[in-house]
Every structure is written in structure tokens, then in C-alpha cells.
Image 1 (cartoon, rainbow, N blue to C red):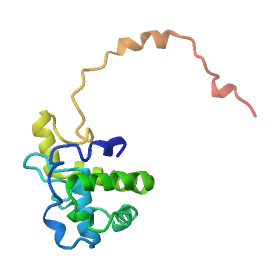
Image 2: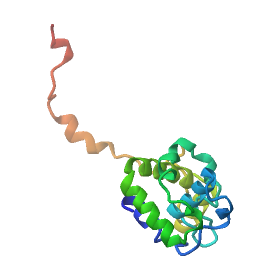
Image 3: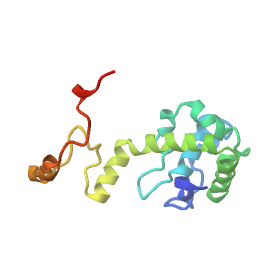
Length: 162
């Protein structure tokens, strides 16, 4: 798989099997859970995206272009075979794969459990920069003195006539 999906099968948890959802292999919800766990696999004690229950946040039409192209019995395949099958789908249906991957990332990286893990690992607050913002040094207004001293390089709108 290319782009951000390239490492999906190579990350932590890549050697694990499909997991507990192999009981209903043809069910689209079950397939989506398995796909999400391949795209964003478990890391340590943090489950993969499928195990976190994030499939419920992805509308079925966002995934159907990928799920329809998966081989029969996808959930029963070994992890490496699932990754290879997803790589083939990515090549065959790039737009559908990219759409699913985009929504998988959105669901995963806004999940509070994932954000807490990122915060724990990096030491940075896992939050958007706004509305709280970040501390900035006070601006030095003297930096604009050179610009203020220049002659205007535009036409005054009062001089413009039609």
C-alpha cells in the first residue's frame, strides 16, 4: 500500500490475526472492523482502530468501495494476507481506498483514547491549537518600522475613477 497506508501492515500488531470478528466473515460491519485493524493496527495495549469500535463512526458508503473488492473470507486470512489483499484493493480502487483511509484517520486520531496515548508518548497536549492557542512571545512592534517607513506602493483608492 502506498502513501500513509504503506506502513499499515508493517506497524505494531501487524503479525496478529484478524481477531474476534471472524465469526461473520461476509458482514460489512465485520469486514470494516478487520480492515480498520489492518490500516491502524493495535499498538501495545491500545487496540487497533477496529478494536476501538471506530467502524461505527464511518458511514457504510465511505467503505463500500473497498469492502466490495475484498476476497471472500478476508477476516479469516492471516494478517500478512489481509495486508496484501488491501494493497491489491488500493491499486485497483485508489479513490475508494483513499476515502476510507481518510475517514479511518479522522475517526482514529480524534478518539480520546488515541489522543491520550499521543499525549502520554509526546508530552504535548493532544488538542487542537485553537481556541486555547499556544504561548507566544510578545510581538516586537519595532520590526515593522522599516515597512512603515517605505513609501506606499499602491494607488490610493480615492484616486481611482471609473
